[in-house]
Length: 118
Image (cartoon, rainbow, N blue to C red; front, side, top):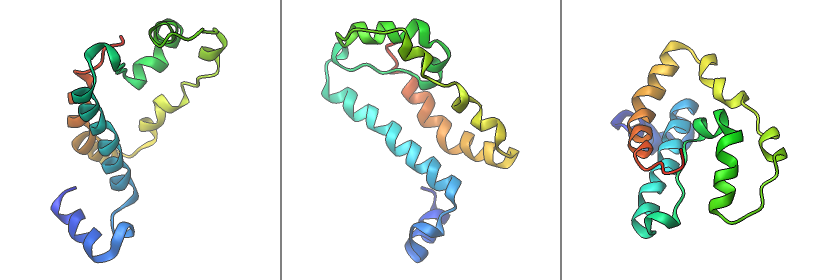
């Protein structure tokens, strides 16, 4: 959280931080958890995948994922996954996209280095 948002949060609580910035900080917090998980598990015990890649290549990646976790796979699973969420960024204004790029992309790019299901 940057200094300005920390001050807003301290003075006004969670509602003092704009919703998109809250979402970006929340995203960073969730993605950051993968680094701690990676420290605690053997490399072959933690599957890390990129959501966008999974959605784009679901017919190829889902069977591999299910095989790795030793569960039966049904092709209907891929059919039930929508690609709608991949285009959400297109609905944002340029300023909002810039915020996402500035706040979220560094942690996203660092997490991509841990992806082991491609």
